[in-house]
Length: 95
Picture 1 (cartoon, one colour):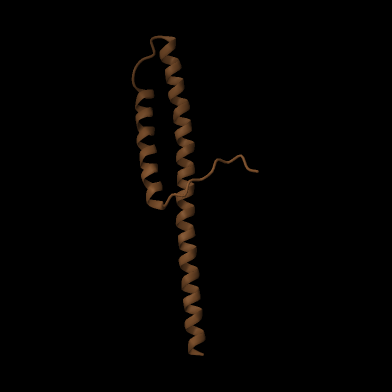
Picture 2 (cartoon, one colour; picture 1 turned 60 degrees about the vertical axis):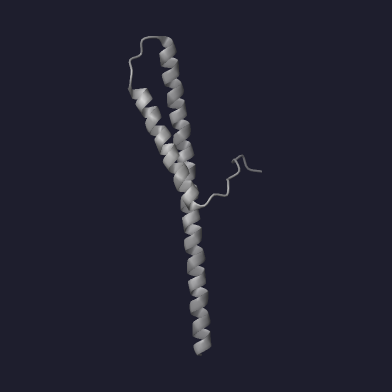
C-alpha cells in the first residue's frame, strides 16, 4: 500500500488551469512575505506561516506539472502506437 494521495483524473487543460492558479497564489504569498516590516512577534509568526504555505504550494505545483507531463507523454505514446499500427497495417496490405 502506498502513502501517496490519490491522483485526480484531470486532463491537460484542467492541469494547466490549476498550475496557473497555483502560480497566482505563489505570487500573492511572495508579495505578502516581502512587504511590510516586522514590528512584533505575531507578525513574524504570520510570516512563517506564509513560508509554510509557499512550500506547500511549491510541492503542489510540482505534482501538477508532473501529472501534466505524464498526461502529455501518454497521449504522445498512444499516438505513436496508432501511427505504428497503421503504418504496419499499410505495409502488410501492400505485400
